[in-house]
Image (tube, rainbow, N blue to C red; front, side):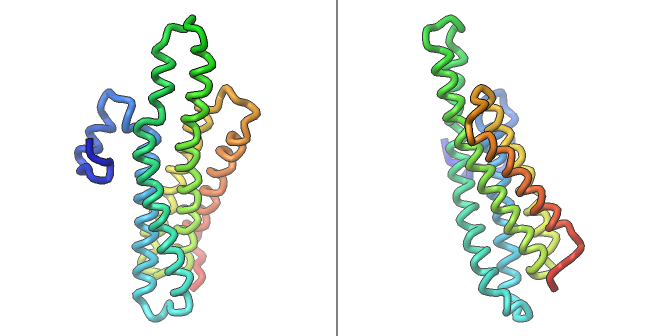
Length: 200
């Protein structure tokens, strides 16, 4: 099967809608994160193209580069999400009285939390970049940067929740605290992006 990024949009949507565990929520969140990062790159690029923003070019170039890195990272995570839940499904298929099933399921769920949490981290960072571009970038691309922030927040919130679900049986796990904090950061970024105030 081809990589998610190499499939047509129509194929991808059909596969998400199919009665199959993957691609599912995790891959979808990662792809939305990648799309958000692309919007940040575009808005930054149009800022770099305008001489009136020359004093901001260095920062915009850095943000564009970082957004590109996060876009690539999100695509890698989307691929990882295709198989990360497999061990959980294997354990769930076992009869409940199978020796060691509960332990295997617990380990599999714990392992399955890492990937969506990584998506949430990336998306929270993308949301922050989008908010900054919305405030300081090319004013004509503000709507695109806002779109990036809103989409990134959604991806962050959903991915963090997926991680929390997988960590339900681990109340003392420090990843639960991070999964709760990341959406708050993304929310603040989205509110910043939506603010009518701009650093003109």
